Image: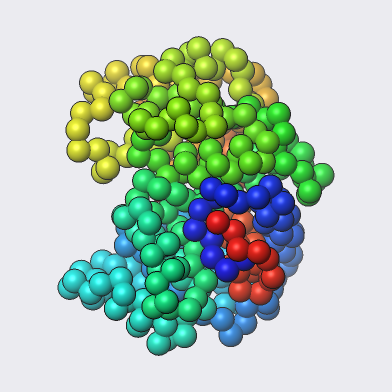
Length: 317
Ligand code: NCD
């Protein structure tokens, strides 16, 4: 694997391999010294043009557990705010000997530009680009689902027959996109629920079922309900009447949670708007995987960095 830009086009074998390596990495985390020397001497750069808490910290923890050197480069307070181009920044990072660049950017396609440009000869990992993709989030979500279903026997398995309902601001969500491609490739059946204004226009071409009524979608008793954050920062229009109306129709509140089967998982990539798309009761319930998702994120990112910088694998996407 040279870069990880997208989950679209990833094969089932590649996805299962990453999840299996992540299982090995999760085992490392339980050791007294949760560290492997495999990336000693390698330099990993976190290049973040957009705000992030958990994703940046998660990549940093992952790189450090593999003994890599980590440079955090946030666009705020750097020459980027003085107008330095992506090209100049990439060439600077190349001169510093970066082996991998984890990039989060507000423009869809920026990681791909970096990977194809020739400005830098490093492995590129997309940590979220505009409304396009967020592949490691989808991988950690798939890992979390697979673990809850199969426990210790998860290795080698996909998500065949698992019914996943993704709810909310699909239009602006790179998490939804990456999950649709990855979860369906692993055999899951994905349905999307949103107000019509927050459903992408091309939705008919996606390998999913579409529903506009949350109560109807939940009545089918999905195995997984994945709630998405309302991304107010990407909304330049009124997509729904007001917050109260949104949570009444599309929020996972305590009453809807109570109607779900005991075995259903409740997921959210974070950061959560408690009381808007998800109630505190749902977010903190035993069915919620929110904290597992964060912990698993480190294992999955360790696997990706390992396969990129130390392992041999065909290019994914
Ligand atoms: C997501 C993101 O940034 O795309 N968050 C994350 O990576 N944990 C989802 C979001 O911001 O809503």
